[in-house]
Length: 300
Image 1: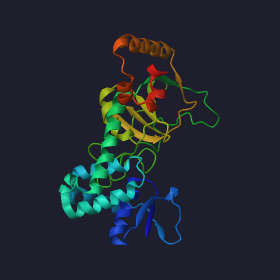
Image 2: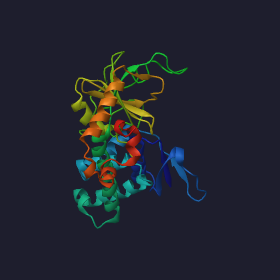
Image 3: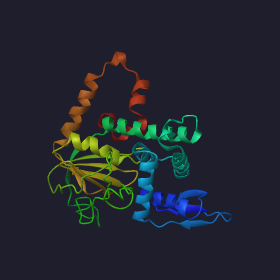
Image 4: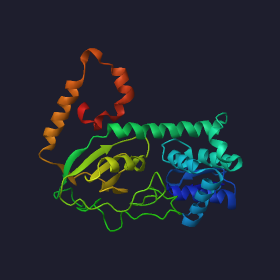
C-alpha cells in the first residue's frame, strides 16, 4: 500500500500512524506528485491532528527529543524519497531507541545524518548570506494584488498547541510549531507603511523556520520579511514574534529613497576590504556558493 499525503508534516506523521495501525506502507508519497502504479494500491491519508500528535509523542518518548527534531529537519529537505527514508529511520528508532542516531554503520542512519547535515549547513550559511533591503509598501501594485497580503491578515499567524505541534509551517498559511527550536510566538505586528527590511532567498531546502530564531534575536525592534521565492512563502517578523505564510512580493514592496545609497556603500565596502593579492575564488565559492549570488547585493 502506498500512502499519499498533502505535503504537511502532520500529514506525513498520519501516514506513519496508518503504517502501524492500518496497513504496512510500501511507500509514502506527496499526493500532488504521485504517479499511479497499476500494481500497487494507494490511499490518500487525511490529516488528523490527534493521530499526528500520537506519532510525534511516540518518536519523542521512544526514540528521543533530538530525533523528532532530526526527522523534521530531514522532512524540510529537498531530498528525493525522504518520506520513505524517514519511515525506515523511525521504524529502526522504535526498535533501537535513542541509540539509533549513533548507528553509523546502518545505511539508513548514515543517509539521514547526511541530509540533516546538509540542511543544518545551509541554515548556518544563510545566516551570513541574507542581505536585507529597506522597503516600503507599494499601493500601486499589480492588478488583483492584495494590499494587505502578508501583513498580519486575519487568518495568518495562529500558533499551534504544543501537543499537536507536529504541524509546523507546511500545514497551512501562517502556522508555526510551538516545539522548542522551531517555535514562533504568534502573530507579528503589522508593519503598516513604515519601512520594513526585506530579503529574497532561494535556498535548496525549506529552512525559513530555522532562520527565524537567529534573525528575530538579531532584529528585535525592526520588522522584517525573509521571502523564499522558490517556495512562494515568507517569514514575517516584528518585535520578536513571527509567522510564515504564502507570499508574492511583486508589486507590493518598493525600495525606500536611501536604499540605493546603502547598496552603493555596501558594494564599496566589500571592494575596499578585499585584498586583491590574496584573492581566492575557489575559497569564496565554497563559503558563498554561486547559486546564491543573484540575491547578494555585493555580487550584483
